[in-house]
Length: 222
Ligand code: ADP
Image 1 (cartoon, rainbow, N blue to C red):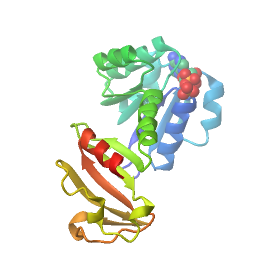
Image 2 (cartoon, helix red, strand yellow; image 1 turned 180 degrees about the vertical axis):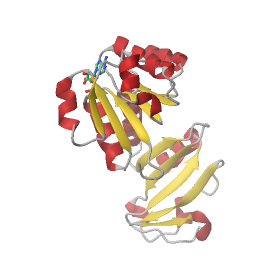
Image 3 (cartoon, protein in one colour; image 1 turned 30 degrees about the vertical axis):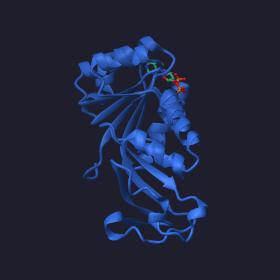
């Protein structure tokens, strides 16, 4: 195995799981994909390191597939709540050090957290929140909660600021708002290399870190 390569187990190869398995493989990771249904496994057979037909409710089958030795395992079983929960428990039982799992609801999320799943994702909910934020603020390209009350946001510079200095945005008085840098084309200039009289151009993006209320004010002011 190449140095630094990590091994992931992806359990459940529906749309969500197979996308994760293929993308991790593309990123250079070694992926063991497992699904109880052979028709889900066959299309991935020559695309990921190992594609295995097994029922994740069976802890011995998971051990046999080499899941216990993986760095991270993710449960991507969607519809079948029982299988999702039992698979997550089995990963804990066989000693996988880092476990992620997909939840369908808040209650399901809580159960998985109680079992000891390290990170629970709710793709529909998480994507919905993300889409709502970006819909709400037309210049907000992307935002990422940092988990400590702060978020990082990537904001499109509105065309009306083309040829104007950064100071024209009028945000110097905002408390608890940090300008991280400027994205221009393929380049990135950290803010400590720029001054507030630096001229903005059409197509520029600005990266900020701040608290949600300040970021909302920022987005509303653009
Ligand atoms: P998606 O919305 O991502 O397509 P699905 O719930 O449709 O999610 O797919 C989840 C996958 O998990 C299916 O391919 C299904 O065969 C698989 N699966 C369900 N139960 C088990 C189980 N006990 N062990 C392994 N795989 C399972």
